[in-house]
Image 1 (cartoon, protein in one colour):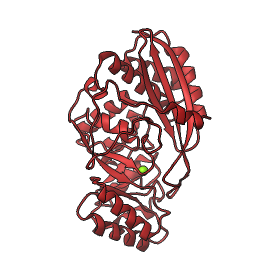
Image 2 (cartoon, rainbow, N blue to C red):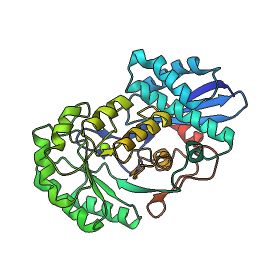
Image 3 (cartoon, rainbow, N blue to C red):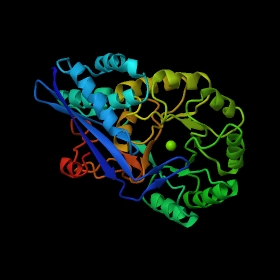
Length: 361
Ligand SMILES: [Mg+2]
């Protein structure tokens, strides 16, 4: 079975639950680059890359460069990934190149699974039938009352954990907000996310200032490129550290793990280059006894989490799942705080092409 054609569609979908604000972002739209890879046997696999509002056209251009390289090759997702990564490597082994690869690799796996007539999770090797999901809000801009309402809503919906943005100028305000959320959720896992907003002097003070809240992790306390600063910080705080949404290849994750600088590995299945490298990173993390808690992409992350031994929890960013963005004709639901992969062959994403066409760029 050979690749016959690769086609792309880039859309800019509004976030329907309202704009997002954290220490460094102001996001109103999610861009999706959808890739259709069709085989000479007439089967089409689909993949998708995402951005937080800019860069999709560049990613699409890179995918089209890759298309010329890939058409005519056998559909062997693992082998193709490594060939394609080397093909793009002169442009950088991490970042834009891997984000472009993310859509293509996912399409290859979807195609291979459809050709085999099996759900993606069974082609990858199922380790569990469902995965817990936590609710996550880009909510630094919400008032304390609005934040409490959001936590109440999430709790009522059955989520298995909760994540809140931190980084108010006054630590007392972060403490007050989190204390109120803790009252709502009781002993369930509570995580916080600083979005790289602190420096190495401020981070340990801020994190130790949140000590009484029994946080499961503090996410991205520092700029994500600085592994040694995270390793030093880890010796200064008791709270576990989550990092990974802005780390793009296995070598960077290795450096974090060897340095003891990360507790929860948050590799984004798209940004690292797709399912092939994500599963490799999960195996690396397993060797360090570290759980996978991937960033974003709730529907796809949940499926790959069901195919590794160290899958811990998936993230459902309010308004940010493919389903919430209305990108899928049949939404994939979190039920009682769990995502269960479907029985359809492939990943089961039925993109709403009509809706996406309305937002095409
Ligand atoms: Mg984050």
